[in-house]
Length: 141
Image (cartoon, rainbow, N blue to C red; front, side, top):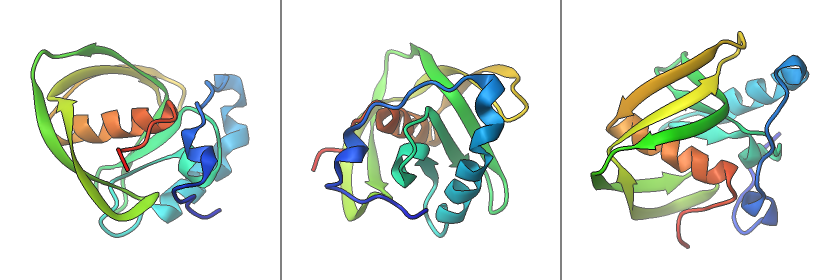
């Protein structure tokens, strides 16, 4: 699977929740996402490789990733900050986007355990960007 690029209409699709009991059917999607999360790329959602499921990866380090399954932002702080962002699906295009500085996200991870985490700063911006992808939203082109 390769990256889907703008203006492909699939990128505007709203991704669907997956049933945790069916998650093992999607292991190949995680493999493809990791293969495409190279270089300076920090995060990728399943829709960016053509799968309409509510899953994304955020790079923790060269070999480690955070996996978010069926994520929901349940709280947003009051303050926003401009985030200078690019997108794997729109090469060489960058924009300042106002994002919440702090969020709380609920999600499941690969072992199907439920998580709730408080996130601030740069990773918060990455998660909000990927959540936009899951909802069919791209940075303004």
